[in-house]
Image (tube, rainbow, N blue to C red; front, side):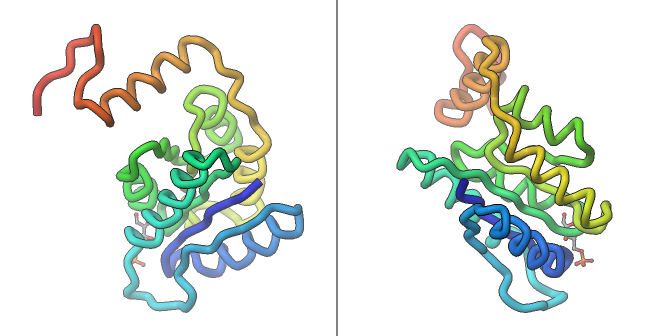
Length: 163
Ligand SMILES: O=C[C@H](O)[C@H](O)[C@H](O)COP(=O)(O)O
């Protein structure tokens, strides 16, 4: 599996540990930064680039997922979700790691590196990677609605207000 990773200063140490761990498991890891510690760096571009990598791979038929993290994971999730085709879920325990795939077919997860011991966060990420999307009709339908709104600003058959 190809894994696109991005963080900011708050997750840099964790990013290094995680990348080594994932490479050890045989994954191809693409690091979208940052390279060096800068306490004033900004997460949006790093995370958007990781999300763009996932979206680009999906369009090319390459199996890929993304992991973004910062202090809370909140801003990183917001950044990833700005990219068309990305469904980024905030993961904060084993259940949300599984549900991110099973219910949402998330292609990116976001984790707060300051919120968890590193071994827990690694376990969430391994769970996310290992959990398939079973493709239950109700979840497929809801995910399709998200994509339709993203592309058209509307959801056929639903009441969606104008901006
Ligand atoms: O949602 C954003 C992330 O949690 C950031 O990693 C966090 O805001 C960085 O905080 P600070 O600049 O205070 O280290």
